[in-house]
Image (cartoon, rainbow, N blue to C red; front, side, top):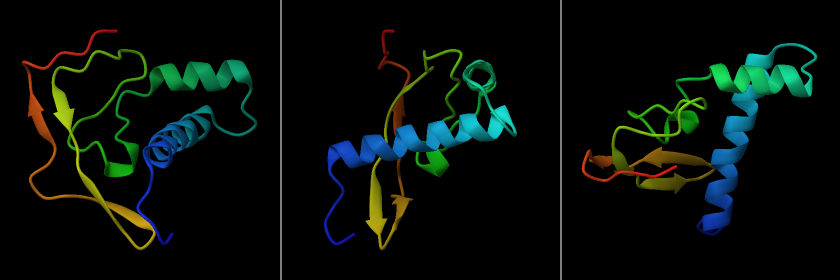
Length: 95
């Protein structure tokens, strides 16, 4: 990659890492039903470390804190910037 990732590319990264986590959790020969069941059991998704230290549950989309993560692309890998995420319990997300 020779340019900064677009917002769409960043969102795609999050989506694809979630999809891969679901496939791994569903085991060999996943079906639509086993994939969805496996996704609902994932409670520690961190997007390959980009959401760290926060973890998402695909069963409960209501995080305890609102957070802002800042990552830098170095070569072909993202690295979370020191001092982030910046989190606050006063920022609430509504489902």
